[in-house]
Image (cartoon, rainbow, N blue to C red; front, top):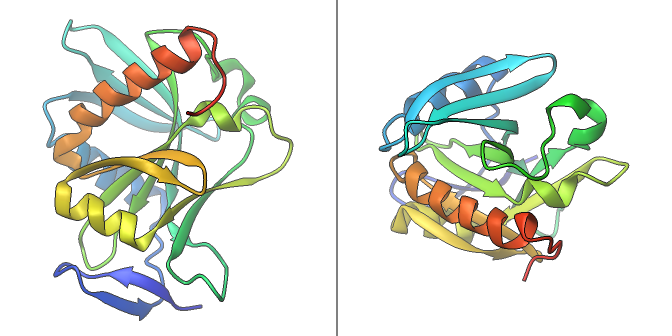
Length: 194
């Protein structure tokens, strides 16, 4: 099915989504995220799970257990501008790797959108997806992706879901916002997105 996609010049085109292999997702993510001020130690796929290891400003190792997914059309014929990442329950898939409260281990849903050789990332609140029993979708609109391209970093809400859209060079800015968000809503005991 053809969906609305963004070209390098920020124009829209109705074409098939670009679906990356697992290896391409890892390679593009390593390359693009390493353009930020954050030191990427490793990004691996092991036991059906992705793990990202970075060094923070204090030279400490931080681990992310994450879903690293393609951002693809949402499957709605009447909403071709909606895209999604589908995720299953991280606690069911990899219960030993999930950490709800830790400043050295975080959970992350990271979507990769690559159309016309123009990679951008979207992150969602992974902690909202730890208790469901079925596959769920994290949504983003093409306009939100475009805003992320134009601003290099964008924070917002789509379909009542908190998200961050950023290019690789702004990974450090995203992490600052994500750490602050997780600290405010989860490490302090709150469980709702505001």
